[in-house]
Length: 264
Image (cartoon, rainbow, N blue to C red; front, top):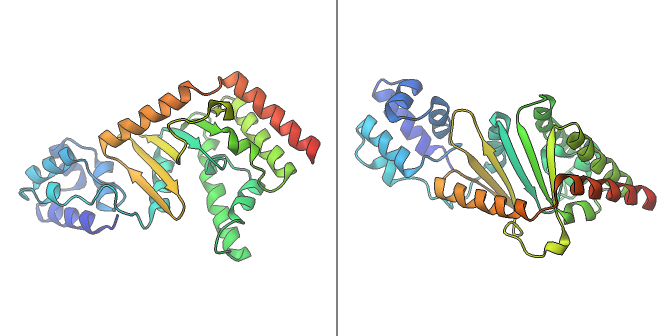
């Protein structure tokens, strides 16, 4: 989403002589939500836009010209990264790779090394630093609460070689056994499940509505429309209900790491 919509909202707010907090109070929203909309990181719901129109006396402009929900997001990852840093709860579903915030350095380097078209070593190092910085949100012992729902393919697809895979899976086990994350595996034997088509991240916040982030080849999308969020949460919950329990998931992780060490 471009910042044009957010820029116009900011202009109207300033013309009305309102601070972000004053507009938020009058429209029954949060200041941070207003800030995200003005910065182009969020799209208001239709009801939020209607309330903004009423407060700013802008007719139905803000509600009528909402950016399309399925519009491409050119800066999708940066927006998702910023939201990730603010979340108090994150629920990840991974289809092919270990989620970025849970990756070890060597695993992350192997993943980034598969970029196409290929990037130079310097650019790969820059991206690696960014990815490892994201993982620092786990340095806090409590927040955010993180659940990782992993398709079994994440464990079986060898990234970087057996030693790298064993180290990566051991890292997941360590985080889980310390109670820092909760891990569930969706086994191959389950067959089809509601999340099979894409990766998904669900995020909750203290003072703003939840969002979802989905990513595919050369594209990513932040969803904040309430109906879409609810549908994605239901899909996640349905898949989670069919996943292996924590104890069995950890047993599979440990056995798989041992298999990689033996193979290596």
